[in-house]
Amino acid sequence: MRQIILFMSVILCLCCDAEDKLEKNIAAIPMDVNVERFDRLFANADQTDFKELKKNYPFLFSKQYHDSVWVLRMQDSMQIELHKEVAKIFPNFDKQTQEITAFYQHLKYYYPTFKKGRLITVIPGDVNYRNKVVVTDTINLIALDTYLGVNHKFYENFYDYIKQNMTASQILPDLATEYAKKYSYQSKRKTFLDELVYFGKQLYFMDVMLPNYSDADKIGYSPEQLQWAAENEQYIWRHFVENEMLFDTNPKLIARFINPAPFSKFNLELDRDSPGRLGRYIGWQIVRAYMEKNNVSFKELMQKEADDIFNNSNFKPKK
Image (cartoon, rainbow, N blue to C red):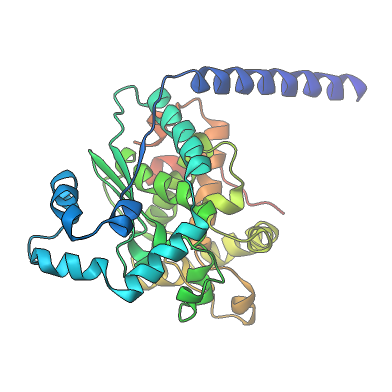
């Protein structure tokens, strides 16, 4: 027994050393990240500055509105208050810039052709929690008015499960999620299993790209919600299997277990104790099991089909 423990300890140390070496190599990748604080520029601008601002950021000014509309918006009391509140929470963006730099370095390591776009912070003014981050080939937009904190007065009318992730700690996971969508491929999303694996791959993407983030932050759970999911993993999985959900194409399953919601809908008494999106959590564990048991690279994983991943994962839930 002592020999086995010693052997396992040596293996663990070797794995840790390899991971440390990898992270050091990634940290050495040159990456200069400049955050353009458009939110501040707009807040501090007046009518005389408008033309120059529009010239530098034409894509942020819809052509369907006359310039006078934007000028009036600069003077709007609600807009001014919103800018003040954002300035309180984000007097600078140094911490986020460091984290985004590390994330971009990971992207560059795994995807050498990666080219970062302009990174711009904005305040759309409508607190649109459905579009907190926008990623294109040339521009990344971060709506700071959607990250003011769970208890912020602007979010009083939002449901708790929505407010929960309207915090600064979710900026990077939200940005990573948008990139995960760009770098993953799945030819079909017809069955419930397809959805589980699709979102599981996105969460595994964060395992690789955000190694210093907690599992709770990656999936957007509180520590208590993550603990609930882990402790009930076998019961969740049994429910999916015994009710023949995996290959079901009923879209209601997506609403019950995939989409953001206050809780998952098993139609049982325990529902209100559960966190929402438990299908994503289970999909994550399936993908993790697949990567533990197969000699497949991260980039190969992101292109694998759901059936292939599931069939070769030999997934068994925690007991």
